[in-house]
Length: 268
Image 1 (cartoon, one colour):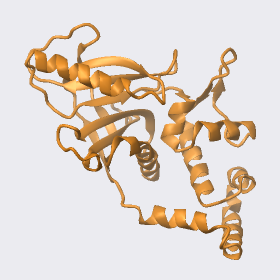
Image 2 (image 1 turned 120 degrees about the vertical axis):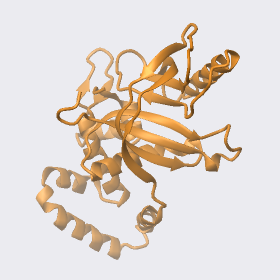
Image 3 (image 1 turned 30 degrees about the horizontal axis):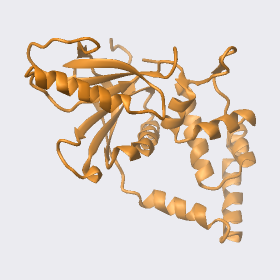
C-alpha cells in the first residue's frame, strides 16, 4: 500500500493547497520527492507528510517563511525563533489579530474521536474507478450502482459502505475502490465485482458533519497519528457510519476516516 502521492492527494492529506505546494517547491522550502521528466508532474512521499503538516501549522501561527526555513535547517534554534515571534505578535497585536483568532479557534475546536483498530475482512461488492479531484462524483455514483445491483437481486447488505483510496500514481487520477458489504451468495455484473476486503490495521477518526467538510478532517487524523508516532502508509478509507439513509440532516452524518498503518514487525 506504499507509494508516491500525486500533488492533489498530498494536498488533501496535509491541509496545504496544491498552489501553496507548488510555491514551496519554487522557493525550495518543500520540494517533491520526484518530478516526471516528461509531464513535469510532482510526486511526494508519505515520509514528507510530517514536515508538510509542521510547515502548515507554523504558517497558521503567522511565522514568516524565512523563519520556518530556519526551523527546518536549524531545529536547535526553535526556542529562539518562537520567542522572537511571540515578541513580534505582542508588539503588533492589531496586525496579528487574525493569527491569534485562528489559534484560539484551533484550541477550542471540539476534538474528533480517535482509535487504532484492526479493520475486519468482509465480503463485498466492489467497483474500481479513478478519482480526479475536484471531481468526486465517481464515488456516490459507484455507491448508487452497487446499491441498485444489491437491491435488484435481494442481496442482504451489511453497512457501512466505504471506499479505499490508494497511492496509485500511474495514469490519470488515483485509484479508488468503492465497497458495499453484503452477505450470502452473491454475484457481480460488469464492473461490479464480488471481492473480499482484506481489512488491516488502521488509525481511525470519527468525523461528524457534512461530506464537503471532511477534507479538514483528513489532516486532523494525520496530525493525531503523527502525535502518537504511528507510521501511516497514506492509503485511506472512508466508512459511512451514519449517512443519507439514516438522517436528513448532513450535520449529523458520521464518517470514519481510516489511515492504514505500516505492518508491525512479525505481521504478514
